[in-house]
Length: 193
Image (cartoon, rainbow, N blue to C red; front, side, top):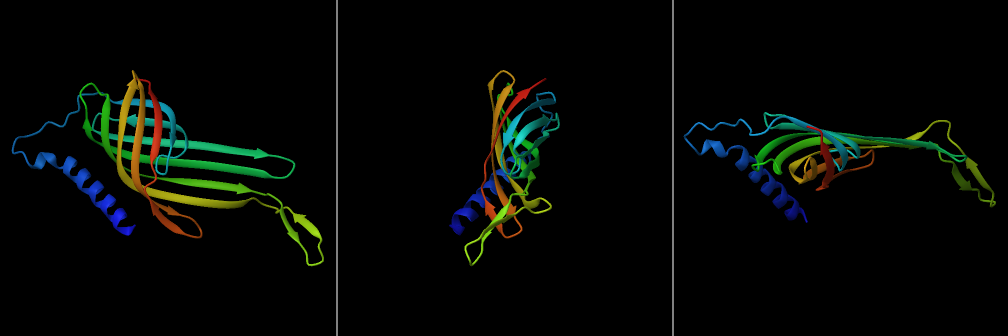
């Protein structure tokens, strides 16, 4: 299993470096001015580095781009109050773009933070069989932080509507553990301009 992770990481790194440094092979001066204008869009994203929820995505004319995702939720019932918030963001660097702007390949780095909390009643049984429930005075929080880097691609499926698929190798940090996973991101974006 560890060999598979190492292979995935090495292949991703080689592809990213090869595509970014392909101009070093040629002795001619290469013009990196993209054949497209800066564009931005809104939509939905879900993933480890892009965040989960409503998304804002912008590609600049200098090959850089950003994606920010946010989803705040909360509620209250007779039994508990709860909150769930996710905020994520990633920076992108376009490695290749097809003519006509219908396909884009990019490298990315990013991170997200998941925060959840509730004051759900905690119930216990005593030795004599009594059942007691207590509600905490404050919300009990559970947080997860994720950072990652990888590659992604975006396809325009209908004019101005694009689907993005990213595969970052992500490190997840919780109060109890740390894990490394290839958690994919998926986004659906409507480009306004």
